[in-house]
Length: 238
Image (cartoon, rainbow, N blue to C red; front, side, top):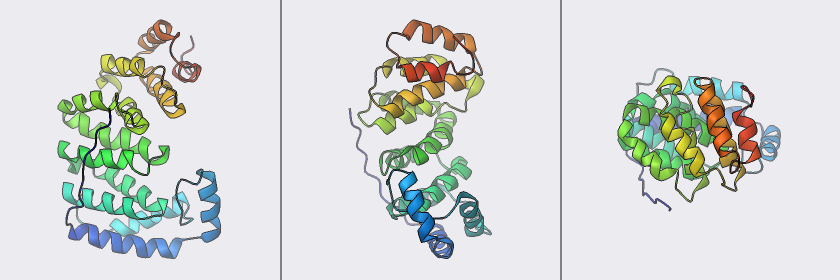
């Protein structure tokens, strides 16, 4: 199943100001030589400006300094506009901004989050969006769990990965039945990133309930990929 949603960029003077600041600062910090190396390292998923993580965080702090707290429309406008810019650092800024201000967004932000997850997709943006943005939205509105039930069935592997990882930070609040059902549903998925996500979310939940994870792996070892099993049991043994 493919879930198609149309999202539009809302009007936001705050996003206008942030983008103006961001593009100016990034232009100053760009390093074309480093950009080529970064693009190659990230499998040519996008062009880069060549800004290292420490420098990028300095740019981010300078861009948001003195700016007011955004509302949901500001967050949507900023993220969607960053997603339209070619260089990957702009998407990184958007993800970091959404992580910082996820509390400003309601359940109505989920279609925007889905657009970000399923557009220009790679693990470097998807994983943070899954755990820190989508996960925060579902935690704030448990009714969104039914949307995750749809995402786990999706034809888009990044939507599936997000459904698997959205509870990554929940610890004792994890809906274990849902987590295990998701892992079982996609246990035979052919893609590396889904298999890795299964192992990762199980490994993380094992910090809370290792016996439950061992039991799940034992019951599903016949269908789970070796990668998923290895990751799930990495810190707790068989």
